Image (cartoon, rainbow over all chains, first blue to last red):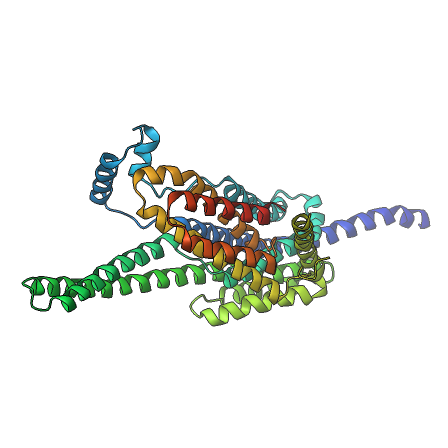
Amino acid sequence: MKARSGSLLPFIFLVGSLALSGCNQEKARVLQGAAVEFRNESLAAIDAIDTMHRRELEAPPRSSADIRRAFVNQILQSKSPIDATLIDLAIDPFQPPPDPEWESFVTDLRSQYEDFAQIFTQLEAGSLVAVDDVRRSAEYAQKLTVQMALFADAISRNPPVLHRYRNAVILELRKQRQAYQKIQTKLKETPDSNNVPQLTEQRNQIETRVGELMDQWQQVKAEEQKLLQSTLEQCLKAAVLGKELGQLISRYDDLSLDQISLAIPRILDVASAIDGKDFTTLKLRAATLSTQIQQDPLWNQVATTSINRINRAVDQRTQTAQQ
Amino acid sequence: MNHDTIRNNNPESQNNNTVFLQQASTILDEIDMQYTEADLDEKRQLKPQLDAAILNYSQARLKILQHQITCTSEDITQIQALRREVDRAANVTSILKVLFRFSQLLTRLSIL
């Protein structure tokens, strides 16, 4: 009997381990939903950052007629040899240069969040190894979250500027003001001239156009604000989701399946409640999240690593400048 | 260590980055407007340097986004000096000079 029960022990241990492992796998599966949501929100944030970057350097659209007129005018007045470069330049002088560093930044960023979610996708294949990977994913989640929180903070401090849209308005305002002041001078110097009705008409046209330009400027500013708020909202959603998820994963072994199952919907609700319409709250939330992450012992190490890297770069730059 | 080197992610260092970026943005805008007004021959001369400046600005913005740059007050002094220079630039040669120095300053920030 003793021998029998002794021989049962490894069996009981094996069954117990499998049950425990099965339970862990269930817990990990429950986490998968939140991990996939974190990936989705992060990818949406990366798309928003990419759009913001592209829009900052794009030129306002021109009609085909305007492009043709400018091309004809510029090419006929030029003195440079006519070649492919000159023709392309005359057609589209505002084509932004290719930016491989930005492209690789965005590609690399996307793959980091895809890789994170992949850890959880492996569970579908029933891999027991993946359960251990889920435990180890806590640090990965923290790194990705700190990254999103830092993006949100940096974007709120350095809002997007639609440079070429603004420049088009400024340039035209400068021209209109110059023309207006010239007319004013003429009217003052020769009040009895036959040109007075014509000059007055021109002056009225300028005033109307300047009013339109004010509207155009306000539209550009509104567009910039919209871009800022949507990007910030998306980064914050991802960062908040990542922070909650990271905390849950770090307590993975201590929490029961039920506790994790209850926590997930709450996490998703917190993230989806973030609304980009109220910019002041959004900005405050980005700053608070950044501070919280730096003060929280769980996150502190990851955040400090990022900040130390910056300080090393500044030291190196300062030393180079002093040499 | 230079006392001006900011040791962490505090508001002062972030403000330096913001001021630097605003100055750089104003310089780029001013040059871009001069480029817009230039004739095709001048555009041809300016375009390669303007593209380089746009790329350097984009890279500096990227590093600030990643919190990999902390601008010092020396960086701000230099960008402010360039800002005054761009206001005085009246021809293609002087704009090219400003563009070159602008790119140099941003490259020095971005590569380290």
